[in-house]
Amino acid sequence: MASIGKMVIGAIIVSVLVVFLSKIAALFPFYMTIVVETFNLSNIAAADNYVKQPYYDATLQGLRERPLFNQDPDSVVVAVRQLNSDGTVGREAVGSANEYDYEWEPDDTKPYRQRGEPLQITITAMYPFEFTLWGRDVGFDVPISFSLTTIGLKYYKDLPLANPYENDDIDDIGYYDYLHDETG
Image (cartoon, rainbow, N blue to C red; front, side):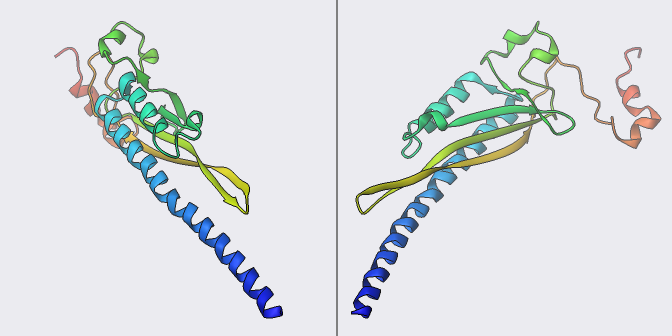
């Protein structure tokens, strides 16, 4: 009788582990979707030093319509932020598709910065870790996030040139000032 009880308990434990592992197996494509979308958005952000609103909306809408993401579409968050020189997260770097809309705006209100400035792209979503066990719904949501930092590549004429020798010893000889001398 004891051996039958052990077999039943063993079968229950094995069935719970199989269900648990099948849910973990679905986590890999969920996470890789977040990684790929973050990478794609970081390439777009690097090209223009910010993300244009149509690209941002298409990425967000595309993620919200995918399987597993569509179970809780409001939990999908796409954040594109500028990074300050001290490494802290700054303003949002999402703006109009027409960069000429910002031509007469003050520099600190533009969604883009000069070439060489870092941007951080983060996508966060809730993974629904749910399964039915003996007629009961068991589960919880696990926050999954991926972040990439990229560098803007585009040069904007309406922004001042950042001093690349700001923290370098070469500026002590005035090389930057020599290159950008207005008098001559």
